[in-house]
Length: 275
Image (cartoon, rainbow, N blue to C red; front, side):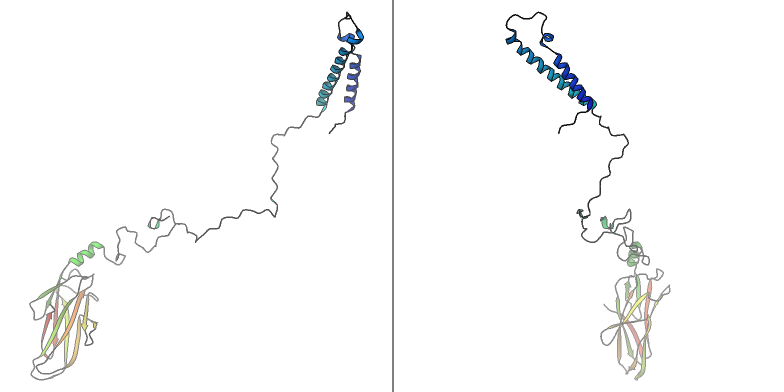
């Protein structure tokens, strides 16, 4: 693309061209003319002079154009950079990755279920590292429980020299109550009663677990002092009642001996522990 020259540029080019025309071979050669044929030798210097003049004019024109061109404006400091245009509405945007599985709830600081980061501990569970099954607000410490189970309570039976022992929270003890009619006649409505009492202390409700074996072969709970039966017992005949007893885990520490007795209006009673 050719730029149009200004009036000043045109004047400068014409002045330089006119000046170039004033240059003659006499200006470029020595004062003494050379010998020989002037017509044959004077053409080459003239051509060279004209070429030099034209080159000078071109260089001067180029310099003039460069000087006259307006300088480019430099960016001013502090000018804010252009704001990028927002993307077109139809430009697809990357979607966020979908989370798989159920969200994990954040755990409270300083807490770790079973050593796994993000789960919540049961507030009702014991935080004691030594707590085991059966421990809690209403249960005795393991030391007291072991001491209670190692403690023995003696059981004495009416009419027998044999003695048995029970441990709080331990196994059961079975014994038999036998009633013999020694009155010489039949006893109508003969009653047989049982009594289990503590020597040297008092028993509370639930300290003893007492059961009576029924005629159908099932055990039914009864009180430590209870009526076993009321029925007719003929002369010279006997009847038996099988009973079992155990001590609860919190059995009173002040009671170390139990006594088992039986009563009947039919004649003679005896209590025998089961081997």
